Image 1 (spheres, rainbow, N blue to C red):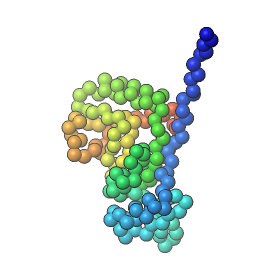
Image 2 (image 1 turned 180 degrees about the vertical axis):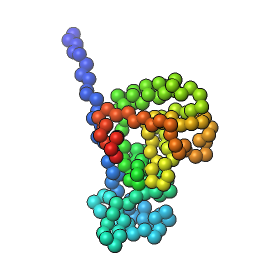
Image 3 (image 1 turned 90 degrees about the vertical axis):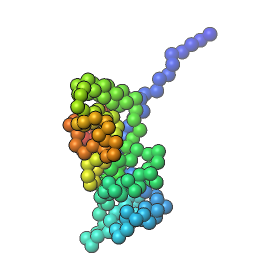
Length: 170
């Protein structure tokens, strides 16, 4: 009997955050939502733009608009609101998941009382951002955030393996 060493594929490459593309039918459904009433929107190459007298401009989505879209358009997608842009997050690969876990455990030891260490949970940065940092340390206890996500964070950690430039510049 002949045996061979197992073939181990290389880790999956992650591409950085990209703007979330829109289809014509999604744009039509979005345009009909009350949250977008009165806005002059158009679809250009998969991107939603706002038509202004000086020409088209990228739409800056608010948290209210993001939340109106979230359950309907982003099911099973990692879409985040960052500085008014809807960005599609790449899937998490094992090295990043391990880094998030290690950072979470280390910060739980460093901030034992009076703070909560939150992994991959939203921060409420009104009005144009609702990021989900890899790890955030916030003041208080977890019960303090039963009705609203935290606004400030004491510390935010982004774990990056191949997307450091995108994670720190966008």
